[in-house]
Amino acid sequence: MKKRFIIMGHICLNYLPFPILSGDPFEHVASILVNISQKEAGRKLLLDPKRGLLKQIIRQFDSGSLLRKKGVSGTIRNCCFEADNQLHNLLLISEFLWPALLLPVAGNKIYSEEDTSKMPLELGSALSIEREVLVDHEIRVQALDAIYLLILQESGRRAFWSVNGPRILQVGYEDEENPQVMEAYERVGSLLIQENGTGEASTQVSD
Image 1 (spheres, rainbow, N blue to C red):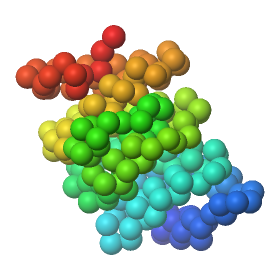
Image 2 (image 1 turned 60 degrees about the horizontal axis):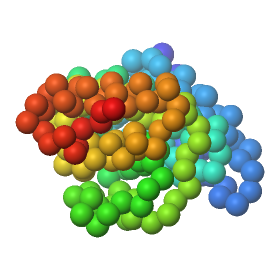
Image 3 (image 1 turned 45 degrees about the vertical axis):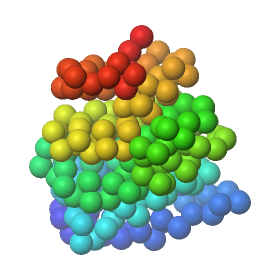
């Protein structure tokens, strides 16, 4: 079984390069990534820092293919189910992980310099300019589910606060109209409020 997952992982590596200006003939392989990550052995393979598979997969989120984006988002979410014992390996790639999770749920506003100054460069730069809003609600739900799984762990919460994550969710929630996505925001927000009772109201997601 392990050998099978390794082989599939290498197949996905061959799939990773994606066209930017033309159609994506390999976008259907995204479903393979999600299937691999649904199994514990697959998640361990993807989270092995020596292989670096998850980092390369996350970078595929910049693809113009919605199907590929969904595959990447679903794979990240599934891997976050291992946060209770693999959080360290997840946070090792936080430079790629947090933008992939937070940009889809950041809303469409241009963030203030005060907000972006509290974010890592890759997040702050992206949120300080006009950008295309992600219209697919399933990806937003998957991103919020992944964030929830990460912040269930104390170290995950600290990492989330360190990138000004709560502020991003607050702004994103204000722009959200899809009930399913709003529920996912509120689930994360309730956990942050519960675990950080001394947090300022301006950083909390609420009605």
